[in-house]
Image (cartoon, rainbow, N blue to C red; front, side, top):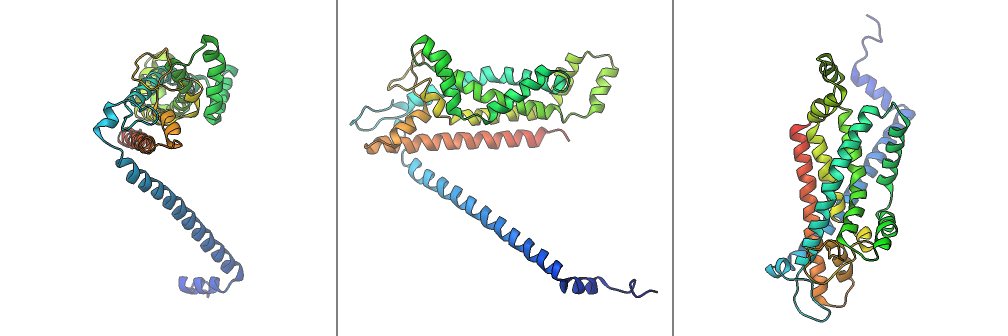
Length: 298
């Protein structure tokens, strides 16, 4: 038996430990691990700090009045956020209803024809640009093309701006999910004589419906806390309104306005509104992960 074959793993590790190259790599590895752990700890510490501060200050503002009264006038006591809650719900709901079918259909088109024609490639390029575009730019775009033409702010304008933010999220998620469907499943459908549009909608889309629903929920969570586009489109008001063709109160705008005010009750309402948005977005993210983990294709 040769000497090399008699060398034990312990001897190999002992010899490697004496190698300066190995020691340098080991030191680099340990430094990298330490920096990674430190960065993670720093990020988690900041997030936990923000969340604890939000809970402590936000829970103090939660009351029946918060959900029954409208935003108070300057200098008045009490008040609530019901007009802002209703306004945000209407605009986000309408934006979701508009962006969901558009985003899903565009995602199907990209998954089916994304590599075959220039229109699909252009659509994917525009979608990527919209995903990375600052929301304030989208707000200015809607202001110039819609608000400036009709001469007034409105909930419809806010919904349009939010839709433009949500559509690319749904498109990209749907496109990515559809590409995960095994080719064998598609080939089996084609072998049975199914046309391409039926394979795309009844086979391919159905196989990844959990992922598509997740994309819609993520888009909803994305637009729920947007402030900048609503400042240029929906503006704000001080009363309860269901008229979406007029300026409409919304939680992000009210929070931005009240947080910097000199009135204690306004600042308290801002903390309460921030808590509502944070936990709403958190609930949507948890729901999306739950849906995807339970029904995602394997």
